[in-house]
Image (cartoon, rainbow, N blue to C red; front, top):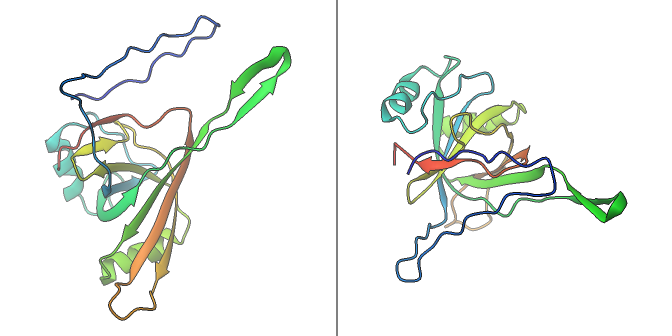
Length: 185
């Protein structure tokens, strides 16, 4: 699978006809659970080829102080349906605004490094972000998405429950992020 491209949306009423896929005998499905959340500084360079294993390994090996470094968090997360708005204007036409996308995640490894990451998230910085599912699909394309990340630290009341960092990453965009195979999966 290669990185898909966004369609050129029409500027007239004719529209595009989407092409249907699928197979009655051998359907292709993908499974849930976001397992990896990948972050870079907001001013980090885009990937040249997000499918290049060498490029991922190179950026992962960079010191975190390097502008192009990436950090990969093991998480348990989801990407629910994006919120969208439609406004009816004159002539009974419909105008759609950008969608609000959210990735909810939980970091359940309670070491000092992850706790310090939580404290850093509380500063309110912007990031470039990619996310990948347990079955090896990556979302974000070469450029990533540009979310605000909010985290909270949770101590459950049960002695047998683990402490964790609960978070969400939120951004606005017309389209769902581009996807491809995750080279590090």
